[in-house]
Image (cartoon, rainbow, N blue to C red; front, side, top):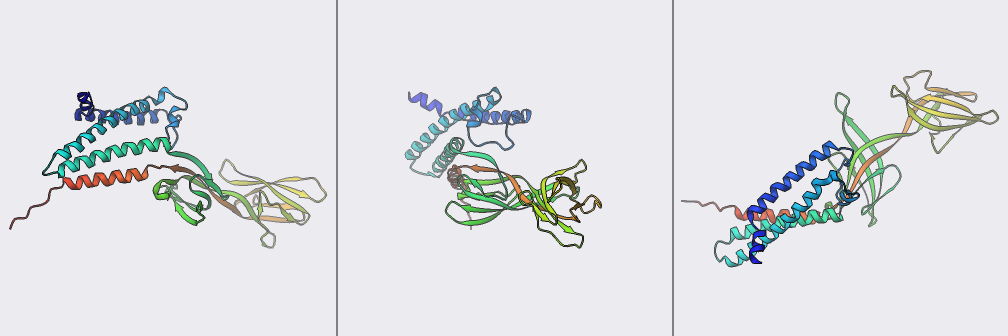
Amino acid sequence: MLNIIRSLGNRNYGLILGFLIVLNLGCGSLMMNFFPDTYPRFALLDFEFFFDPVSAVHFWFYSLILVMSLFGINISVCTVEAFFRLLKTKTNRRRQVAALLCHLSILLALVAHLHEGLAGKSQQMRIGSRSTNLPGIGRSLTESVTMSTHPDGSLKDTQAVLAFEMLDGRSLKKIVSYNNPAIFNYGKDQVIILHGENKPVGLILTDSKGNKQTPLTFKSPLSLAGGVLILNKIFPTQHNVLFAALTWVPEKNPRKPLYLALDRRFQGHNQIIAGPNGYRFEKTIEQGMIHAMVRHNPSIPYMLVSLLLLAAGCVLLIRRPRFFI
């Protein structure tokens, strides 16, 4: 029995299992490239995705679980052996302590990843101008979205200002961008922006004298002389010019559909006649909205301890310099 346990902790087996883990991860990357519609844009943290339902496309993950389980057994046996080897060593124990710390670091990292897969959660959410509930964090809304572009006009980065109302009652604001997620609870909860947009929700008109009218939105019709103006929808044309579909509801006559170009350069198309007066488009009213990945990863503290153990083991392996006079 003792020989079987020792064989499970064989270093050569551990090295082979390590290579097999890398091989399975490489197969997983290839499968994600060959079947992009099968996998989400951002990989999920929980295991449920790979088992609901079970699919042959995920063979690499099932193999990875098996190999990592064997590697976990191997490193556990190696850790126990390193502990007893340390107890037997009476002098020059630095190397033995370093080996034990490195083994504990790897074992703790495996446990952390297992905990991440079983208890971690990821979900995509839209965060707009209305307060949205974020599990484990609180409530959030988007205050503004700013997009920067390269000289050729392609998108460079998207930056959003999010307001949070935490579960403990605190209120705070955070700026998120592609490489700058909002982090909470010591890294266990994150809000990662996928992309953002400024969605038009209304417009402002001016009359023939240049006086601005009350904002017209989807939920707030505009009362004018002789009737009411209703905003039905805002849509782009083939030339990427926004148009607004309106309905003029006079006090006595039937309803009249109207279309308005939301661009001040389109003279003649950016003005309408509603009742006795004419009105010209002034500007759009926009609300920022982002598509975000909300992640919960409870294994972050374990990973931190694992890195500290590994760093301590590496420090112990550094030889002290000898100075000669």
